Length: 295
Image (cartoon, rainbow, N blue to C red; front, side, top):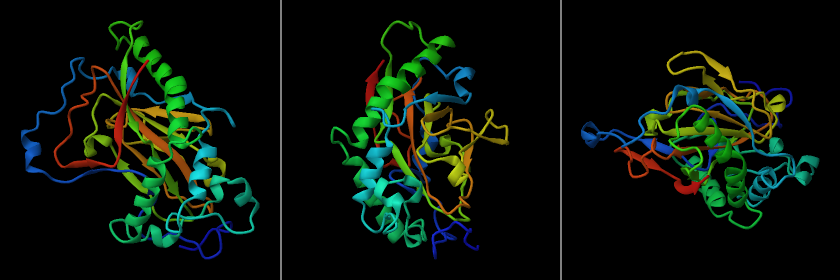
């Protein structure tokens, strides 16, 4: 694949993984899965209304829930395997995420070698960024002030909560997953549902773009309903989160044909009564944990 006109000289991604990510949820075959009765959810399945895509405002530029400055500082500390900004570039001085360059060698082999090393390095950076202005603290402020209050409103509106005035427990993925998708690339993320990886019906997905879609021309695409087989762009802008039911609705990320890097955060939130915090599908392994919040 020839580099796009705006691609950094000599940079193209034609093999291996589409993204460098800070965490993953893996699933392999396990005989024990046949006898697994699945999670225990006293409240049953989430209502149909919770499976629809919604855009949620989660931060303003420079605000206390804006994760971009923390991500830029985190990436500035990254080793060469994760990447860097080009030298002598104005984008480097201001830490524009779209200009961050991931080495092609760090994505060339999705299952071994430098790709595994680069992902482990990025995961360690994210997991350890717990300073007062670090990504983990900013993420928790976003959860507590923007994400969970709105999620509770939606649950109450569709009758999913027995008492909307009572405190509700949520189980949020922590740390969130940071993803870097450089270009120009021919690699993409295939259509999939998160149920394939052991995620539960009682979880809601949140996808937060940190780079401008008009520059990267990459947007998450989600089925309009479970099993529909047609995918629509979320049209989420910087400052918004696309909220959807990724366990049942398949989703994909197209190839990044631009010469810029798509950067995003994503995470899942389990809902009390619909999510079983003690259950894990046999054969699965997650690089992240969960933290309990109430709202």
